[in-house]
Length: 536
View 1 (cartoon, helix red, strand yellow):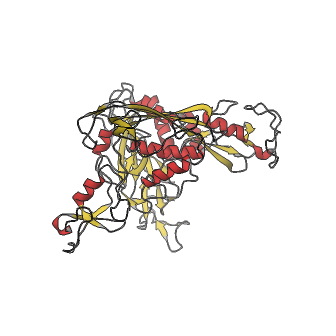
View 2 (cartoon, rainbow, N blue to C red):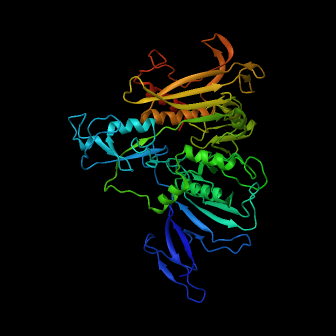
View 3 (spheres, rainbow, N blue to C red):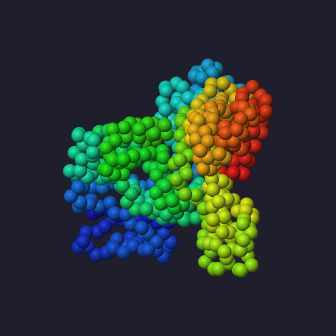
């Protein structure tokens, strides 16, 4: 049989393998079962609705091995609300085993609720060990591994938001990777993510995004590089390599951008994104470890299907897992990213008697734009001044025309886990948030540019349950967009030029009070505040 072509059809890239006949053979017509009845494809002439990706070996002088293709098909929707987090799947147990629960030391046959059978109170991990369901849920929230065997392979990495595409990897012969004497050749990684429509979990569902062809990255062709390649392929197939957002290079919104979760080296000329870099392999492995991507051997088994376990039934529940992490926020780097303004120039000249609703001057007196969503028109300079580092709402109807952006100074957000129960949310444990913002000089968008401000260290808490974990994701987004703190007057210290909380409420105590837990409506109130700030 000759080489093959992968034919991608439809919005979700359903693939059909079509054999390529030898050159001497006549064109072969192959019906494509997944296509409309009237559609057929030939190996020499494919319909315009299909895109063809060849997996034939290339003839480049640097290519030593045939190029391999790794396809990723983005889901139409994410399967559940916490699928973008690391999670463990718990499976039904059809027969109650003998013995005790390893966590609470009580018999597995015991049931804490008379309204359910004993089997309904049990759950099994992928490694096969059985526990009381309530016990294993609470344990996994705090320690993401099996309490019996310590296996973390039962924990699945998160699903990313990368659109569908194809990853290729091949060998560049006689092209050594800078900084690696044991690597006479280099692994070439290429990504194709074609233009398509954003899905419900992307920033602007239904809107087209800008794709690309042949985005390249490089790895040393040695044992360490090949192990990392295997883990990157696994991350690619989980949708973790790219996302849809605003390009830092072009400033264009609705573009495919590198995910910060899996760093890549894209040149041989040094710099932050190029070789040589003696720390890159270690840093990339640490990033993948933080995502709970397994080691290369386990990745190979899972991708080949050799590690798959079936219990005859679907998982009964997915338990989200919180990762300990530190998130840096740099207000200087954020200021360099252009605002994502969903505006368009007005092609027609405005009516002479139509006024800008911001400055009250005639629209004809300056360059005008309109908000795509609501069609209200303004002077561009008025909108830019009014929306700079703000929430970017239409001044007339409140429609959003850009990403939320705050004026928090630079700092670090740390996420940790506490073993104590969060008051009001038993048996859920506690997520601890630490914010550290050092003192510095106020920027142009602060109240007193050039004057020094006092930094701060703050602690806040969330319940470690599904509601709390989902709220945590929104608080992380708020932090990375400068919305958590501001510079102003501190009511506590009775001083000006201090870092203070912005408008997002936080719970800073676990012993009650206005700013502490328990508070049964805090999560609802905080989500409402984030909705008002237009956070996703």
